[in-house]
Amino acid sequence: MNLEEKDLINKLKEIKEKEDVSAIKKELQSFVEAINNIKEDVIGYEYDDKALTINKTTLCIYLNNMLEQSSKERVDFYYDRLIKALTEVKTSKYNDINLNRWKEYDDILTDSLWIIDQRDKNASHSGDYWGNFVPQIPNQLLKRYTKAGEWVLDPFLGSGTTLIEAALLGRNGIGIELQEHVAKIAKERVEAIQPTETKSEIVLENSQAIELDKVLKQLNIKKVQFVLMHPPYWDIIQFSKHKSDLSNNETLDDFLDAFGQVIDNTTQYLEKGRFAAVVIGDKYEKGEWIPLGFYTMQEFLKRGFKLKSIIVKNFDETKGKRNQRNLWKYRALSGGFYLFKHEYIYVFQKK
Ligand SMILES: C[S@@+](CC[C@H](N)C(=O)[O-])C[C@H]1O[C@@H](n2cnc3c(N)ncnc32)[C@H](O)[C@@H]1O
Image: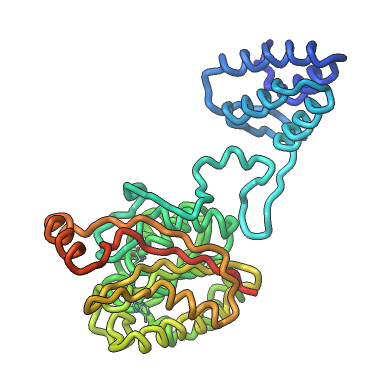
């Protein structure tokens, strides 16, 4: 079978027009063989005067689905599905994932347990900011909850991981950070990769009090389409000496009040029906597990957000803890507790 002309759809039509299932299957069999002989992983084809592509493995999955059927009706059913995948784009209101081609998204996680062993070291991420998150977190969330060209807001920007991923994925980003030298580093890193078609705005401010309407007005936008928060895990790491730094709150209630103020101050500019996510871990104090994750989740629920997912992500040991692994094991055994190996990603939808 000649695939030189890349006339994939016409070839499929030809096969489908055969009278009986065994003739179709015979043709399909040699078609699959021809495709498997193509060296490239991606196969080009034309539809509606457009040059399009499909993953070779995915195409073979569709064709094998057809091959496995015993009636003409079932073969036609899978044929229609394949033609849809090749010719129609079906997306939801909040991302660019083509649901007609969902089998091709091997890179997108859909389970609630995320085991990420290695930090993605691409682009200008460096991982040297104490308390940063792995780029895979914003990468996954942005692909699920935004479309290219939309706006993302991160009110605890740190070293800029969210905005770097946003720019790489063709999304625009606003980041708020309290510390001047940290905001400067974030700006340099984002600018190092900034493609011209996206915009990034980094504001040195307190997320509890910033007048975001003014920032949005300057950018000529009214709303953002996704909010991603990675606040301090209360006082586990003291990020700065600023009074309004959430890591300096005296009590748990103060921390949750401050976090609530950030929710109020930022999510009022989140478009209705769109998503916000929080990345946070728990803490241990005086022999007691303090479930910061669930407390912060509660702050969102109190405000009427719909909980869409609780994701548990593995958490690497800090270097210090790794060196003292035995000591920590002893402490856990004698103190009746378990060592932290996970943090949470909560996903909410604005009603
Ligand atoms: C957990 S880190 C975020 C790290 C970030 N995701 C990254 O990958 O680099 C929290 C950040 O929030 C900042 N921060 C704390 N309180 C803040 C506030 N009230 N307004 C703005 N930023 C704040 C801290 O300075 C710190 O850089």
